[in-house]
Image 1 (cartoon, rainbow, N blue to C red):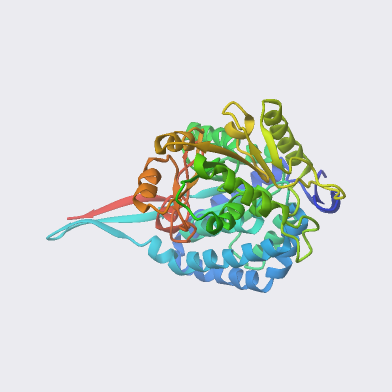
Image 2: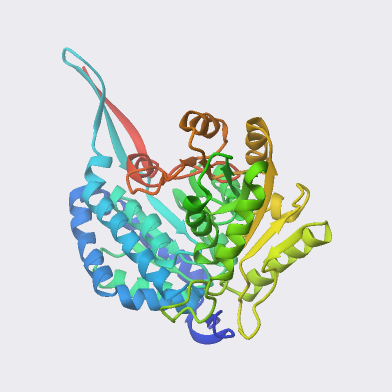
Length: 457
């Protein structure tokens, strides 16, 4: 039987283990079982479904260290970040379990005398949940748990870059003793995913690249089923001249270089007022020189490796294109000496032009283009000069100006100064090529449902 091989990108692609790739027969069987389980799972009701999910949360708490170490080994994330991510996931997990009934509660849209119009949120049926590797447990949590709470049965597919995390998740889910077909997982690459989404299903819930998301959304359209897509981003951060540079350097660094820059919602284009452009660039360069790059299993490491050799080579191609077209490397721009694996130095680029790949494409790695602007209108135009629209940041002491600019940026989430949109109750998603639909909070849960109106007269 064909295998998916897991390797450690920070240890020169050392083999960690493998899992069996799901066969066509196996995928077909899991879809049939998920269909058979839909009516019974719906009938349990939201409170009972949450009760059955509570042991998963307890397993999560007990196995945090094990999960964090596996994340670090499979994708190269520093162990301190892996642990921090799981603490963050804890808050989302608790919110889903505690607030699920409120998010899905019936609502009254009209009431007069004896006439009452009630909105009922019912499950769609079978949800196919396909997620990427950059937050291996968090992506599972965000996609699978709300769908199960909403009453959908789930067939899950994790990225081929972290099959051992998929195996661990299967172990945790098997321990719940759910009714057969309520949750299952398949393993494989895009071919396995393609077979799955072309099966008899009712929802495609996908996080990943815009290119793949568009193909999946086209399949959903032809099948006339729902698609919820959280896709790529090329977030701008607009910095005006009145900021205190020292207070925002840490925010800018984290916004770009967390998880080695492999975050859909990361800052990927820094747009700085011309009057402070040089000063801010110097501070960022100084910050990058201090970064400790190395073995992600070491507690002192601040920047680990990229997830895979292919990701490293893609990044090198994007930077090479920029340099060929006239960009200047201020810091980084190469693999670090003495480290074997998918490592790349944190990099600053200037003299960036709009025809360069680092401006037009999503850059999934520790590379930050920095470009100056003169006027507010120019800053807005630069920020919106992208096929993406996931997130953005605006920094200015003039709050009225910052909010004015935020309102004109075409993005699903815009943080102003120290604002941070990441809360379990706040919907997340993008404009343009960054996705369709929302996840998290009331709006995210309701995306997973049919809306039925029951009108009593």
